[in-house]
Length: 338
Ligand SMILES: NC(=O)c1ccc[n+]([C@@H]2O[C@H](COP(=O)([O-])OP(=O)(O)OC[C@H]3O[C@@H](n4cnc5c(N)ncnc54)[C@H](OP(=O)(O)O)[C@@H]3O)[C@@H](O)[C@H]2O)c1
Image (tube, protein in one colour):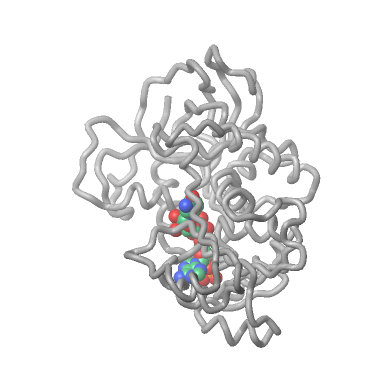
């Protein structure tokens, strides 16, 4: 089967950083599905795993997490899917990735793909939807249907992959959503995703919120830079508020006052935690993706795909990584076909 892989961890402008390779097709057993991958999307985690370091792989290492495709074969314990089903998922960081024509994934972290979306549009969603949904509705204490009623949520990095879906599910849950974006096109995108207000994260946040009549927010999702917004969020969050984090801080965070004084809940999301530690409830990730697909098909959520760069090969994938590394993409970048 065709795949895109690395053996060395090189800067993305090096043509050797990602390579076209031919690998043996894997076999499905146990709870695994063998999926014929039709489309993939690229996330910052792909570039973080690929980031330059001296390590060398003896065998080609395939990266990639988001995928949409068709079930080609199933293991003997599979109960949720059958051959021919259209699926989408974000995979498991501890296993070979989705940048290959055929891919093994545990059925419990897989969802039935939205019927109303193409494979390219479906591949844009899983990793970011899992992240936003688990963070807001499973780590933080908000009900997914109406837990945001009467509350204000600040979403830092609203136009990114995670922000684009976070804004939508938060609006649907009833929050007044204030997103952050720093460019005309990202401001416009946040509004299209449903943000009530947009403020600029390159400018001081508090005066911009005050100008909107907002002294404090009930909750905040920091989807960009944990250190940079830590102090200001401690000031902006209301007593008994909640902050959601998804990015590793560069050093120790000061978790005492004002966080302690105000009794602010601090919540981590790591969307690979369930598959990585094979938690007893890992099937919740598959159920969550099924639910997101239903909401997409019902027109309650919109896809976040913004660009398909081309077919899945090393050259196109290097371009996708380069764009992700710029930190300026809007919505999701996808590759489709082989
Ligand atoms: N823990 C987890 O499970 C998990 C899951 C998914 C992602 N992540 C991490 O979360 C981060 C975001 O992921 P993503 O997929 O949403 O990224 P992304 O799509 O690459 O985000 C791009 C957006 O980030 C905004 N941005 C860039 N620098 C910013 C800053 N300093 N402050 C605020 N906004 C900034 C930009 O908006 P403007 O152009 O308007 O400035 C841009 O539109 C990444 O670090 C990723 O690795 C963690």
